[in-house]
Structures are given as C-alpha cells and as structure tokens.
Image (cartoon, rainbow, N blue to C red; front, side):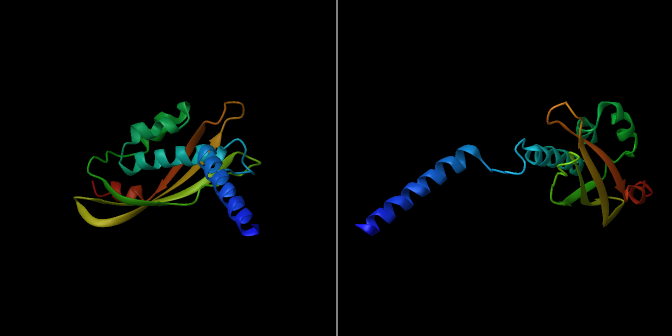
Length: 150
C-alpha cells in the first residue's frame, strides 16, 4: 500500500511538472520581465542577419537615429561569405538593462579563399519606459582587412 502511494505521488508530480513546465516555458525567477529571453531572441535574429550579410535588415535592430551611420560602416560586401559564427552567452546586467556580447564571424571572399576572423562587439540596451525593445550598438574589428582585398 505504501509503495502504491509513492508511485501515485510520483505520477502526480510528473504530470504536474510536465503540464506546467510545457505550458509556461522556461522560468527565470531572477528575471520576471523576461528581459534575457527577449534579448536572446533579438540578438539571435540580428546576428543571423549579419551572418548572411543582410545589413539593411540588421539595421532595424539599431536605434533609428543611428541606422545611417551603422550602414555606412560596411563596404560593399557582395562577395563576402560568412561561413559561421560563435556568440557569447547572453546575460543581462539587471541594474542597467544592458548586455555586451562578443560574436566572432568567420568569412572569406572569392578574391581570397583564406578564412578570416571578424569580431563584433554588440552592446545591447533598452530605453527606459519603452517596454522590452532592445537596440544594439555594434563595433566590428577585422572588416578593414577584408575591405583591403577589394
């Protein structure tokens, strides 16, 4: 009888955990506003757009007043091919609502099939009072070596 109760309790606990674990998704008790979750999503979307050299779409993650300056930083990279990227883990500084993430892209051009490294420092921030929208300030190192090939 005692073992039957334990099995029943275990089944009840498993069904409870399965139901609420799937229904509510990941729970982060120290991040009740889900800032890290929305930042992870924004950072991943932005990084994939940069990886595919779609800088005009990536610029939508840059604050509107800074988008033109962001786009002028890129030479004409029609032949640039990013092969892959590696990104730091996304963490939010709760006192500042900011995050700095380093992303390393690997790229080559038909002019030089040797793979080169491009490092982007992404500084993500939120404007107070504007909800959970994240903007990025981006600096690249290594683009000048690729631009010299053109």
